[in-house]
Amino acid sequence: AGPAPGAGDPRWPGREQGPTGRAERPVRSPGRVVTVVPPARTRGGGKVTKAGCSRGVEGPAPRGQANQNRRATPYRARASHPVMSTQVELPHGVGQLVRFAWAEARACAFAVGIFAGLAVSAAIPLPVPRYDALLLYGIALTAVFWMLRLETGREVLAILGFHAVGLALEVFKVHVGSWAYPGDAWTKIGGVPLYSGFMYAAVGSYVVRAWRLLDLGLTGYRPAVTAAVAALVYANFFTHHWLPDVRWWLAAALIAVTWRTWVHYTVGEVRYRMPLALSFMLIGFFLWLAENIATLLGAWQYPHQARAWEMVHVAKFGAWSLLVVVSFVLVATWKHGVRSRGGPVRAGPEPDGRAPVSTRPHPQRQ
Image 1 (tube, one colour):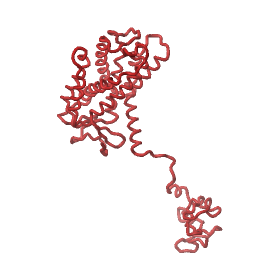
Image 2 (cartoon, helix red, strand yellow):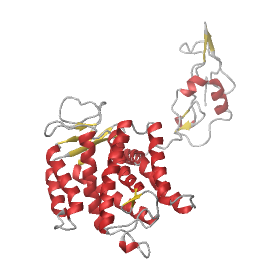
Image 3 (cartoon, helix red, strand yellow):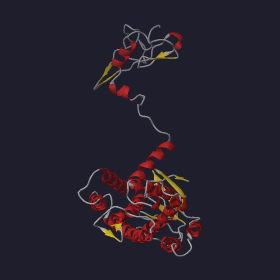
């Protein structure tokens, strides 16, 4: 390989040539020890790196070279060189999707707790009627969420409001025969167990928690007309038993009043947006799936499920999407307040301007 560069070279003072033909002895300076290992020439013009690997040359490094070079290189010098990481980084799109799914799962925490109670109560014998046990469980779960500060006192009050609104709808629907609660219970009003209100409370909890966890904001929101349509939607759940069902007309009206309304949300460090009406449809679809699971667990029963369980009719998907409108308007009006026409509605303090950006800057994506 020839003599090592640096032996006797004034550019490398104090160096001595070792048995491998390289200058390997450290230079002692006042107050510190500096070890410098110059590269050695190899056949073919390649160079041996500090780790003993040859670049541009096939075959192993000179015998013993790797270990000697590693011993000669201080730990701090070795650590400064880039090393291969064992962590696998996901593509940006996949990582954002995982973050969004995790935020949605956290927003559904109360609903997951309710479904867990349904599953356990259906699998094990209970000392009290099942519906009564579920009522006690729902109250305890609400208290746990409040004590763990997963929900604030105001959010708990909002969830209780959803409980009351849902219970009123349940009493009417059971009375007209839309569905039934076949189990016995001490805490039934008009054939409806009081625990049933927690199903609607779970929807309200999701909206409240998602608004906070995803830092939701609205632009182009028309609070007055949207609230009016939501009120008509809620009324139609009652009146369509005697009057013509106008839910499809109301759905068209909802699309019209939210045509230029965007809901903004934050995932990681990026700000996204989607049409508000589309978000209602997506939430309604997942609520329809959840209803199928709930009826499978015996939470309530539709007439066509009396003999054996069957899937809930797909028409309920539209009904749930409309019911989400009522929940969303209640949260937007009560929890966050509404400004003038087209003004943003946010979970936190308002910045200047129309765009509901977060308190930290986010790139905007659609």
